[in-house]
Amino acid sequence: MLPQSDSPPPEAGLHHKPLPGKLTSSLQLHLYLPLCHRVLLVTAILSVQLLLLLLFSDSSLSIPHLRPSTTTDEGRNASCELGTIYVYDLPPEFNSELIAGCDRLNPWTSRCSALSNSGLGPPAADLSGIVPAALLPTWFNTDQFSAEILFHRRLLSHPCRSPSPSSASALFIPFYAGLAVGQHLWSSNATSDDRDRLCAALLRWISHQPSFLRSNGSDHFIVLGRITWDFRRSSDADWGGSFIYMPGMANVTRLLIERNPWDDLDVGIPYPTGFHPRSAADVRSWQRFVLSRPRPTIFGFAGAARARMKNDFRGLLLRECASSGSACRAVDCGHGRCANRSAETVSLFLSSKFCLQPRGDSFTRRSMFDCMVAGSIPVLFWERSAYSQYRMYLPPGEDWSVFIDRKEVRSGAVSVRSVLESISEEKVRRMREKVVELIPRLVYGQDRLGDGLMDAVDVAVDGVLRRFRERREPNGDSGS
Image (spheres, helix red, strand yellow):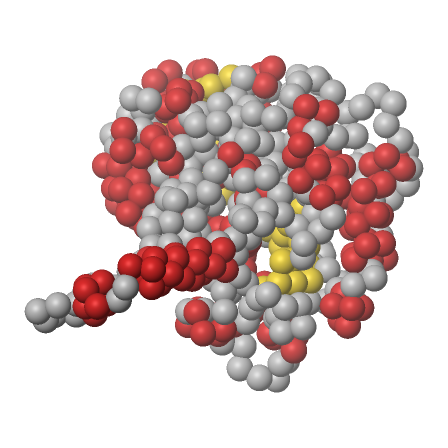
């Protein structure tokens, strides 16, 4: 659900205080007008008020739980200096009908709960007693593939949203491609055509829009809620869909939780975590909490071994953790134990100075963002797990992370514990402070945070607008 607005309704401005004086003008009319005239006058006033209420109210909903809003040129704030955004109103088959069919998106279980609350998921009641009570309403069991829905929700109410595609600097396509393709990834009888059908239909629809034809999509962007490889099928026998390789996508900027480092149109965005602050005050309260936490465990690891993989690196890390006694603690995430559930992993990361982040099923993991939101310092073993992924969000790695060459760990030349114990307490403190400073940029707020803080959506929008402005004005001042 969308958060309540603190701003008064439009009709509030119609109620004026009476002017000072012995008699108000309305009372004078009451004294001097005949009864029938007074009745007519009251009826007229009530009719005008009703008309104004109807004019100012917005009853349109483009998809369930998402209330669109646009802002007039006069009402936009100064942050729109980079440009404005137009949000396409797509046919419902490309977004809202996918949500409505949430019980058919996975062959094993319904995804309705995971995608509820406009992508936030159900409240994380299991965190009661783990996070401060005042911040419990900011925590949800959020699905890691929900970024498409979270972005759509926020951009519908963005202060720089344009009502017209012709005047917008960037045009957003709110197609839930991750849901469209994902529903066929594990279906035993799904074909490559099934995985591509909605993607091809979307491109047919948008290719008839004058705003798309004007630029051939070069000023358009889309959020794809899964990793880039799920949309890069080269042949019918391969994994995933071929959406990114379709001709209509040749110039469209894609925001993904894992990008292809060799494709400049892929832009990495954070995996959604369970923390969704309502305001800057929530963020600062959480930052104080994680900075003040005692961290008795040197390093922690949330994950599962990959026994079927040759030279499984995760298994090696779990064995080192088990042999390190109280210096390390692990949460076994086998059999989906950690999926969209917060208590065990949040507790682990809140009590650990460092958190081990080997690659997951792909090079990136949501766990790295869960770890950082909890104020723990990530330990990486693959460059592609973060450093070449999230450049819009993260500074150079030595400020907020530890990198250990996995080959040296495999060979026994170093141990994870010895590397981490060699880092001075002062450096650990500085690194943790940097991690905590980054938290606002890594989370998806329930609304704009305000007070100068940018969340993951704000950072992405700012980056896209800068990118498009630099294309339009290659020799001008980029403002960055």
